Image (cartoon, helix red, strand yellow):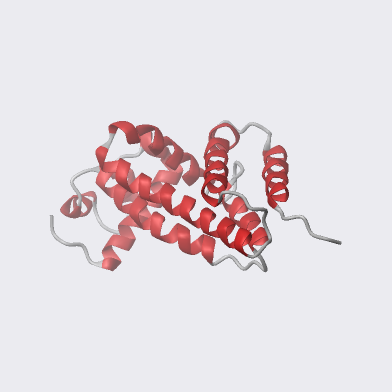
Length: 196
């Protein structure tokens, strides 16, 4: 396969992102990606052997961007930063990016059987986990959070966010306020006691 320049790769990644959010993995075809792409379907196959390779390129890009997006949130302290991260991770039906969260959840269900998707999905989930862990670790270090295990806390929040995508976003169960109250109360429970 020929090497793809950064601009062309970015175009493909954007096309995959839009098509995946609209159609999901099962209904996604290279023709649907090509509809979002500025070139032909044959142009996609010049660089990629399969739809899954195109999706893998999108996931690799998303893993890099996710950490940057979470880190770029303007927050005054780790508690506010963790709340902002949860706002991003716990989506509701109809919100921008909700369709993409559902598509990633769908891809995760294929990961055990799909070598092409497994590694980039692992990188995406790991980037999210690492960023949440960083926020919690900083909060513990600064005395904002109790002395909790940052990795375990991050893993719990990631699992809860991924799970909420299934029943809240994909199935549109009316639990958005309940989920927000739940993760918010969980963050409150992490806060260190202050002498007042």
